[in-house]
Amino acid sequence: MSATLSTQTTPTARSAWWTIFRTCIEERLVYRGDFALGTLMRFLPIVTQVFLWTAVFASAKTGDGAIRGYTRDDVVAYYLLTMLGRALSSMPGLASGIAAQIRTGEIKKFMIQPIDLIGFCLAARLAHKLVYYTVAIGPFALVFWLCGDYFPEWPSASRFAAFVLALGMGFALGFFLEATLGMIGFWFLEVSSLLFVYMLFNFFFSGHMFPLEFLNGSLPKPLAAVLAYQPLQYLAYFPAAVYLGKLDDEAVLRGLALQAGWVLFFFMTCRWSMHAGMKRYSGYGG
Image 1 (cartoon, rainbow, N blue to C red):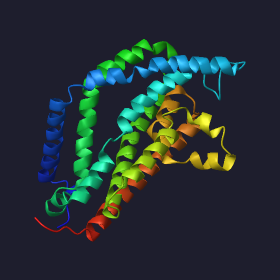
Image 2 (image 1 turned 30 degrees about the vertical axis):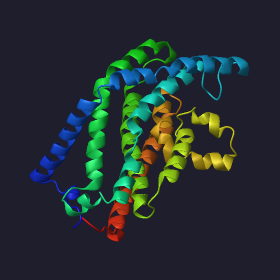
Image 3 (image 1 turned 180 degrees about the vertical axis):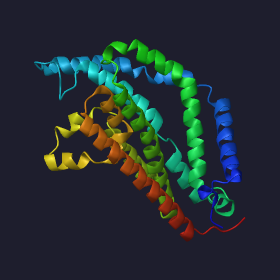
């Protein structure tokens, strides 16, 4: 029997999703008390980044102290903002977890019970992010305050709203993209190699390593034009570039529209993959 609860908005359905969401929050509050300290430790490499980019800009000897529109301070601020974006858009264990459930047969519980796989995973991830930021907001605030001199002046209200919207859609894009990768497990039992390749591309083309202007400037124009439309940039680069004012208003609006388009694309692809995979899935035994 296929899951039907995902499309219902009845009181029973809403109660079920609220129970799932609340239970996931309670579980994470119990076993993730290390969030605050762990988050603070993740910011320690920023010290290395300051020294690294100071040396890079010193060796570049640019007349205006900028490389492709970025100063040393811009790059440090960019790095901090991408850590914020990646904390929202990254979904560790989502794709591999879905693939493992398919491989072990655990997926059968979503086929015989009125609980939707994607909706269940989404509720769990929302709970995870809520708990994470509730506990880790202190370390984030402390680090951003200590590094306040690297940031430009506070962006306008419209620019800040675009930044927040980009972060929110980054979460949705990261979730549906990785859930889609997990659904490949219906066709291939082992997807770990594929996920490794994805993470490698994600590291570079999301802008997590450095601003994409640095990469695009060294690529042939046709390839750079193609990469300008790829979805991974919206997981880290785009929100940071919006906040820092590296994109004009037209580019911001165009980017938000493209990001929304990619969210819709992977939402539909994820749904199609799940339904198509469950139709071909066969499970035997108790």
